[in-house]
Image: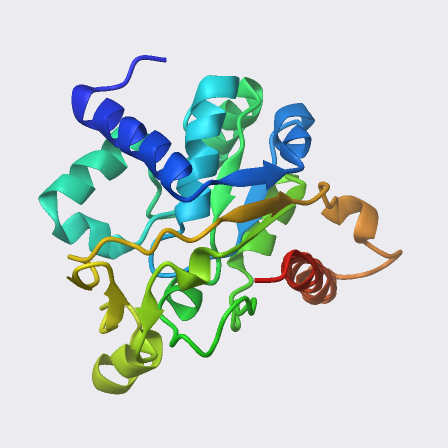
Length: 245
């Protein structure tokens, strides 16, 4: 696939980041060998560096950049808005036609349900899966009949030293968590102007989880969604705990 020059430059930056963080992953075969799935990833702070490293590997080995749900705040900054558009980023749930086309191509869709809840936490809260009440990822997987592939990583939470809980502060001041009122210390200053610390990122990709196989006889969607949420987040937390820091 041919990408515009600005996006090719971003891919080059991601490859440099992979080396900078000594990125390593296990379980990539679950991405490579699975039919279309919803990749559900942990959101390390403040950028999900491991996701970007995985995405560039998917470009190199699978030939496409995975479509990903993106913060609406990306639309406020021209360069981020441009890169999001070029990468096929999603701000809303794709419709049935878009999902059918994605599945016909055998491509994966990526979501990071923790969002700024996980990304903008203080340094003393690390490697803890926290999706809050968010269940939309499961409703999407169920409606589109997509298995879920869980993805987590250690190290990424230490890329910056978080001083406060930006998500809670934003909620307290504005009633929502869309504005990243977060102070993170890095090399040379404060995020987003500082470079991240050269942490070692170790990523683990779990086996696909089929929601249709989880459903019990006569079980309604909401009951299934709550059980699946407990299973998925529990599996992701266990994977994080096994990776250590």
